[in-house]
Image (cartoon, rainbow, N blue to C red; front, side, top):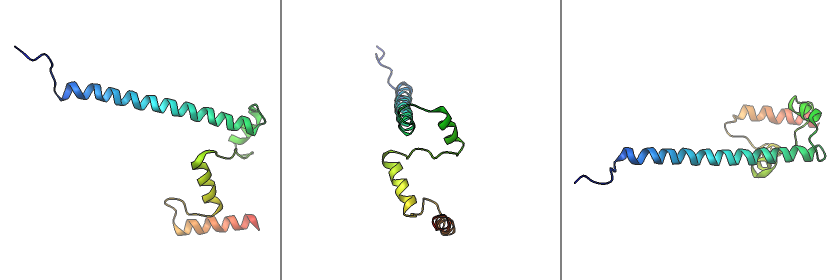
Length: 107
């Protein structure tokens, strides 16, 4: 009598791969939707409660400053810029140029 379940690597790998891909897609979709909502909320608050498309166009073309980045990562990046902490992969020469350009703008 043959075995009732054909259990080998192919019968396990395909469903496992499908489950992993579905899980990754689900997490990506949820996080991207949450990020878009948070970003829209930030721009609404910067414009006084409703998105102003003229201001948005100016921001995207560099005429207006973007709203302050929220969250832990944005705050840490802002603190690093204020304290002139070298960023990842930045050479000493690049850091010196960045510091000198910052001093020229302040004084």
